[in-house]
Amino acid sequence: MKPKTRLIHGGIFGDEATGAVSTPIYQVSTYKQEAVGKFKGYEYSRTGNPTRHALEELIADVEYGHAGFAFGSGMAAISSVMMLFSAGDHIILTDDVYGGTYRVVNKVLNRFGLEFTFVDTGDLEAIEAAVKANTKAIFIETPTNPLLKVTDIEAVSAYAKSKNLLTIVDNTFMTPYLQNPLKLGADIVLHSATKYIGGHSDVVAGLVVVSSEQLATDMHFVQNSVGAILGPQDSWLLMRS
Image (cartoon, rainbow, N blue to C red; front, side):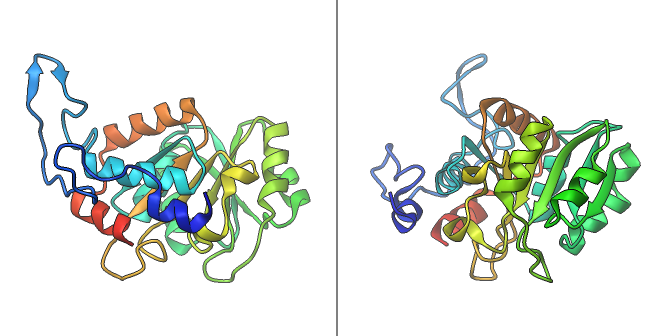
């Protein structure tokens, strides 16, 4: 499918229970179980909600990924991705990242033992010089906010794979319509959906898409454990957008 078609027809179509062509807003926290521990796909809306799931399937489709995850803000998405790592791990970031990203890694996440180095990721030699024995990932924002600096995603992803590192791309400014980092070799792509994906200045949200089953399992564990989820009303609004 072409990008416009994927945006309209990707993800989950309608609602089988009612025949509605638009996924309903399931404004619900808990679900009736058929027996103890036996439920119809959903048990608690922090773990999974049909409206949020429809959005997550849609963003996975338009980013050509394995699985999608919806969060309460772009910063919640970024922070949750960083929770895939452990104390002592080192992550390289684009030097002109969004101010909120810079703040959370330098004022919050560093207190939990994560290490960060900021470099010009448009310069592959600068990335190579920053890699350490405990480096686990390269976090790219391209184009950056606000200076619109550009990084070659394909080149950085290829280098990262050669060093067994994850490549994470903040794709907020380009959107999935213009750029698909997973198709260029990245492992994780994320968005502040508050901006161009939302498009109407009425939703604060974050989205993450991963490229593999293992990353999907790990990301869902963090999402469910931390609980920084997007509500069903905002999930529906993003699908509309």
